[in-house]
Length: 405
Ligand SMILES: Cc1ncc(COP(=O)(O)O)c(C=O)c1O
Image (cartoon, rainbow, N blue to C red; front, top):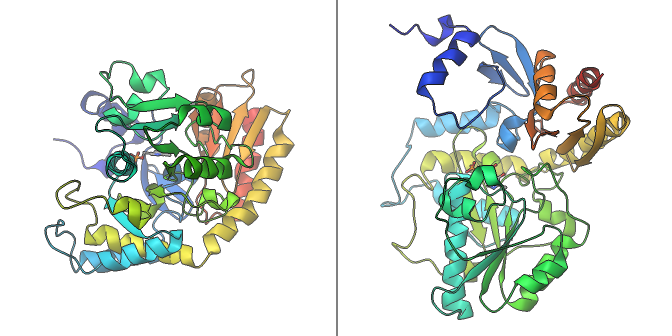
């Protein structure tokens, strides 16, 4: 008989996964059993500072009391209706999310990839019905080194061979241009273009921040050429960069905004397309949907997340503590760090390959009680919960300094 999980060691549990779980991830060898705030605890009771925060799904920390309370309250009332019926939580979620983002309408989904897929469909429909693109001809322009998810259509416009290789045939209708290159975008956008889809900061690529003026330039270009600007803020949004949205750093409002991860408070998968009425208004009954999209549990937690963001506290913390993060990383340049990019509480740190790979540094940090994850060989990504204290952040930077020696 399989022993109850709490009697099995971390090593046992890692071994047990191998024959029964698909090998589509290569996790650090830590088995988390409990968490609170910025800290997680493994099966043996060892504590770790979480400097990844579920790739920004845990912006408010693990088990934020207000979010847990909202979830518990809703669990006792109603969890799912499907959209065959209305539920009493969805209207408020949509009203408050639209107000928070300065847009009009919400299409609730579950995962980030679903929000991206939904936006692709809406943009195409808009191109045929509003812009007048001939049927079947719509194109969407995307950036090289993007990360928008893992579905077949989304990997169709990925430039990462590991994500694509072996998964064709691919969905047509996408053009790839270099990121942060307005001239290339100008050339790629034509009368068939439904939308330009970009991440305001490319998270998976290593927290790649475009030059000042790029996002405003994309906004100007898409407005002038008559196509939509879709901002994928699934990782960059909801407080991470010191603003509610990363596009706010350039005072830009996209036509469609994609949110996910932190929108579910680290409790339930919640994503959304938030858009102008003339864009999302193209969808009619039966054309799109999801059984769990907009379920009352998701709406209750999502509303509680919006409520936290309405206070401005988390955006302020990210901006203020981000100064300490930047200062700490600046100190490490030349001491095992070859460079970094940071905005708010989010950084991509390039490790000197002679000191170790990103994976090796992540494993050394784990042994020091700090959890991070590598990306693209020699980069590690820092994205702690926005509830982290200055002392905890200083501790993480001290651990990084130690393992780089
Ligand atoms: C910018 C961006 N878009 C989309 C996604 C996909 O989200 P999900 O994993 O919830 O499908 C991610 C996930 O990392 C992301 O960073």
